[in-house]
Length: 586
Image (tube, rainbow, N blue to C red):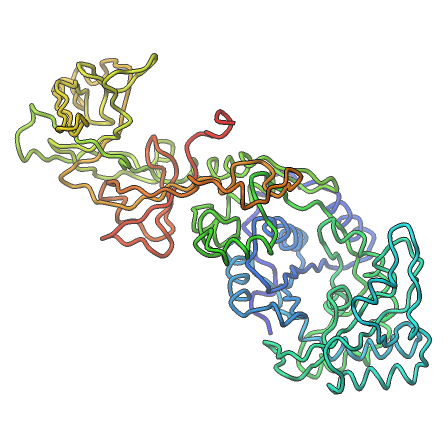
């Protein structure tokens, strides 16, 4: 069943970097030092009922990262106990996301691998008097449950005999009863202040085919029950989860303790017979704060609705906060790992500003993304003192701070494309770019003066004509003559037409989930979250491989689209602007 190396793979750590300090790592260090555990075992346990989002990146980095740091193992386990909502497409995407983030698993497991163990464990609970078959409907169970201020009431079926409960449960297993007619419930405490301990359901009847087990099971275990036993079967030492599961921890411990897998090896015989390694230990659940970022929605239900209603272009739409969407947007795995490091691990819930996410990407790409020149809103500039057909090549560094990236040849000709926003016929105060009669430096090519502005019949500017100062060319005496501004360009004769998708934040308010104003997240969608332009890029940019990232000089960071980009028809997605425009805007 192994789908990865025996050790959890992770990006190599910097030996000179200080050891990471947080409360979870401190617990792990103490457990290892005390001899409580000889090795660390963790797991990442997603339910395959949707695509992973950015919040899951924190869990992935923590689960796999801690295992790698302490020389342990991390499993990828699909908690596939709800076949009604699960899909193999989600399974494949989750595996892809984990590997893309830079990790691999020691063992690939599924909750469904353990269905037989879960069932035998449930019979054990019944024989111990810790579980009973209940005939109340879901609505009746809710009514009996009580409230936060009032205790619940015992089910009228709570005192059934062990023999009757075993008989009914086995008949449930045989498929004798209809969906929803019976459940197996734990017998704990209907007066508990923790609602999760008020005789929670352990099994429900669902006559549904399962993606791994087919029609073998008409009953399925509940998440809290299966999750706890799955950790115990796999010998998980530290079961890491987010704070919303803190109230579930007493039930988690109850299940692990009452079943006591390690003390009853006969329950594990079915696993050994199938060749699945069994460790069986008592895991410890530890909760940490989830990753919350403003201007986002991370609810699977709401993300699903965005896709279903056509408000975005699928789960991997670059505006989505799924890992698939972020990847297509141009976010790198290393930038998300950097984000997780900067946010840190704590017990305190907080909301991170979106600029922290964008800043992590900028810092990552600034250090390693090659530079290219592109023009998104083109305006033609003709250098009238160069002859018709003039063409030459100029040498540019691929990265101004990394000589190891080498250089590239950039064609230069008489006709250029420049950004329309780099010219102003009537300049505002402080303008440092091109104006009629003014000069700017063409990046790496020399200084140009604007001599003439050509307009069409409607008065729109269609062309500029100017003179290139021959003494300001690279290597000439006047090359360092000072002018106020520098602009980029692309040779019109050599430029490659490209589709440029200008993505922005999907929501225009910090808390799109806040419905106290009577509005929903749908009311806060940003109408300018996606714009498309037809621009021009230098030839070296057009030759990019899909998912290759660049800094388009003076414009921002862009990535060749994962699916649509080709050298003949380039498609680039804007990943992030060079500076945070939202801080000034807001």
